[in-house]
Length: 430
Ligand code: GUN
Ligand code: ZN
Image (tube, rainbow, N blue to C red; front, top):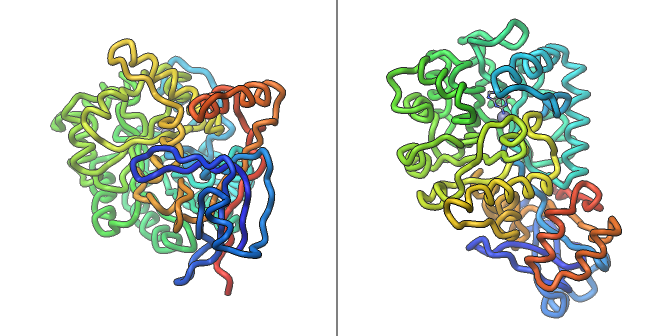
């Protein structure tokens, strides 16, 4: 058992932020095994007397907050960040597919997975739902690296058996055999989870989507991840390819790919029937604002999501997205919310932005109370933030009059420099 003394940010069951200026976080191994968890948290003067003599790390002036959860990212696209294109489809063809074809080489996959995970941790991200490439070895590289670092990570082999160039295109039957083998090899090993990963409807044959849906039914605890309604040309193409479906989103439903633990990136160009389908199936949206702004895809409709009541959380979508930093993503989400505000009057509060990238994202994954928060019982993945990391942040946070101002200052001015340390829960003692 060990304690950390600092200011501590966490969220209650309603998504409201709880902030203890002089807080104590107690972590250790709970009965029943597993990794290190939060045993107690709260104001130091009420928690400390319950743990007399506990070794305590003093982190004066620091803020401890839950590790960030990235709901959608492509680890092989770390080398694609900042590649300009007219829009999604030329971006995929000219930059993304050529880069992903390099993952036929397992040594390349291993090197990139290592670099990616180091960058995630430097930015304070402790859990991510991640695309690999269509090459099974890219998934092995990803999980091997995540396991070595004891992280709770979810990922999967991309399925794309058509409209994809040589080097990334897979073969229908083999792709499903590979997926099932990877589920068997990795899902539930330590803190790792598998995600069935059809790239997007235009790159998957009906047979491949059907097979993916069958696997999703057979393995209900396995995640599903894909893209939907990101870009108008993409949507027109999907509708041409699946004319019988009510909408682009409905294609996935028709193949059994909408359920809890299914996360769809973007979800921009939806109608109310799509929103209701998200809600009724328990699927969730990975809102990817830096990607949507960079590729000119559009603006996620926060008011529509709230009105309907479907789940969502924040994502970097690197390499369409421009940064792995949750601070950059939260700021971009704020801009996106402001765009919608002119129509709806809704403005995103800093507490809600932060929740979307921690407890809210975890809840969207079905991992509420497991990661993305620091309530008792949560796995002990957290960040130590140093608000004095730059002269301007020091000055601005010092003059913050309340929690909203403090969080806003960090969202607007923060980046990887703010993350002094990222702590991953220790594995079970054996
Ligand atoms: N749609 C299909 N593939 C991709 C991808 O790699 N990135 C994004 N942003 N959208 C996609
Ligand atoms: Zn994506």
